Image (cartoon, rainbow, N blue to C red):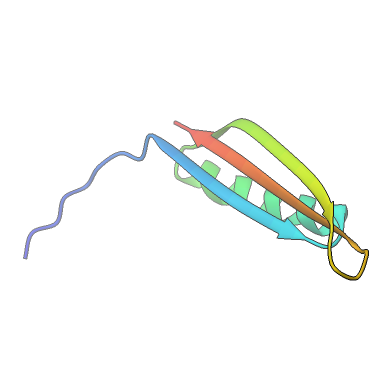
Length: 66
């Protein structure tokens, strides 16, 4: 069995939540995890839509780079 180790250059993660505070908490937690593997935030994109029940639904895409 052979193992190869490659450096991770780019990573894109998607997040969703029903409150902006919950979404922010999820992103902040993942930022600290990704910093441990030497990735920094390159860009953030977010949107809010209304679900079927009229509640706001927040989504975000975070692009990490080394």
